[in-house]
Image (cartoon, rainbow, N blue to C red):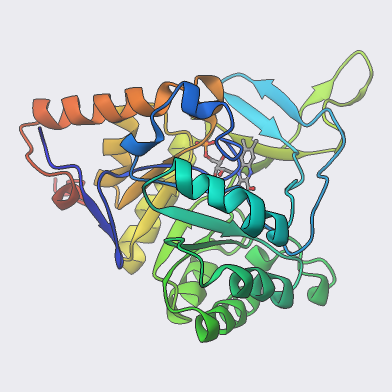
Length: 304
Ligand SMILES: Cc1cc2nc3c(=O)[nH]c(=O)nc-3n(C[C@H](O)[C@H](O)[C@H](O)COP(=O)(O)O)c2cc1C
């Protein structure tokens, strides 16, 4: 068996596969289809200070090779998460749990991290693809300075593993640089792409909002390029997230610079997919005659 263990900054994972934020609920039902202990880890859905109902339905639209979602970051808020959900997740999932955090202000992000920093979680992933009310609703992801201040402030209260989840649109490299300079251990690349689906017969947007985020195989080549660019520029730990649906996708991302891979939409398509992707990754490594996966990181050949 090849050695699939990887290092993501200070975090050691037994294999490079994590479940991506927002695509597996809190594991309800999923454990009937998937032995969660086989994975390298999981990332929770986005947790905010206060509960959020999310957007009204319809919130999902299928497209060729993709999914558009406008869930609207529905979640029970940090208090219920800490008291009710986290204990059951910890009982169910033996591996590392990263908590995905978002807020509409730095104070909200900080309050969530403060509330959870002494819990036995493996770290935090800050989702900066949300509007910053202090800047009139401009997304944090459009504003490298705001991301720098946010990460610096989080670092003052939390020294454990910290990743910043980038939006693929906007000044991505400047935001990544700001996050790393301010002390983030890793980058998660990336969130969904702004997209629109139309209901022709009603002449309306197909979702309750005139737009949503595109995920799934359709975005894989786009995010792969982004991961490649981030790795070439920063040589920093990257958690890849974008259309990963096979062992081949995992190895492609790793060659382009990812340290680990998050599986999102593929789990929604079939809850057995993460286990299949893991088996495929092992088989491909064996076929490539590699004994370890981690040294392959960033080893895409660029010579003539
Ligand atoms: C239904 C749904 C809900 C999501 N919720 C979150 C979320 O709460 N926080 C977050 O950072 N990303 C969220 N995402 C983005 C995913 O974690 C992932 O980054 C993105 O879907 C790209 O990966 P994929 O193509 O493998 O799905 C969500 C995606 C989907 C499809």
